[in-house]
Amino acid sequence: MGYVEDCRSLVVLPRWMDKIEASDDGCIVWKASGTSNGYGRIRLNGRYTLVHRISWVVANGREIPSKMQIDHLCRVRGCVSSDHLDLVTSGENTRRGESFAAILAAKEVCDKGHPFESVSWPSTHKRRVCKECSAMSWKLIRDAAAILGMSATKYTSIYGWSYVKAEEVIEADRIR
Figure 1: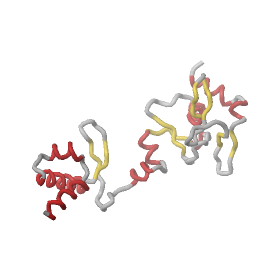
Figure 2: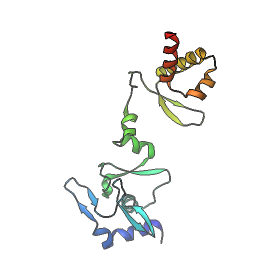
Figure 3: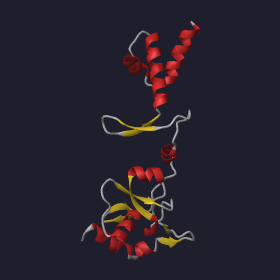
Figure 4: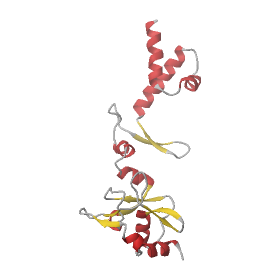
């Protein structure tokens, strides 16, 4: 029997049905074993499996593609209602969430009010940066390196990329 069939067989068994409960908000909540961060889990074929993933597989009749995740649209991690589950990428799951990463992803400007811009690094890893703040930090680092009589590359290998340290070096030079 394949994985999809194993999941279908599991959800009709008492060991599944006895562990779910309908809530007033439309969720079907897992009431048994779970992870430390609130996701329900059950043994399937000798391995612990997250119950919302099993629910999605049963509802959609196919396995979850690699590099994809199941998002709880209701934000209830223990929910197994297939109407509340959506197949998404990791990035989309993060953006939809309520975590610190999701809050940062939703920001359109940096702490100083400059717009974020998306850039691709040679490794194709995308990240958002404030070009204005990056340029300012790099100038401070170059100035601090010059004060100390070294290249910016040498400076960053010793002190890192912190503009705060660079400001300290520049301020100490002004006091002298």
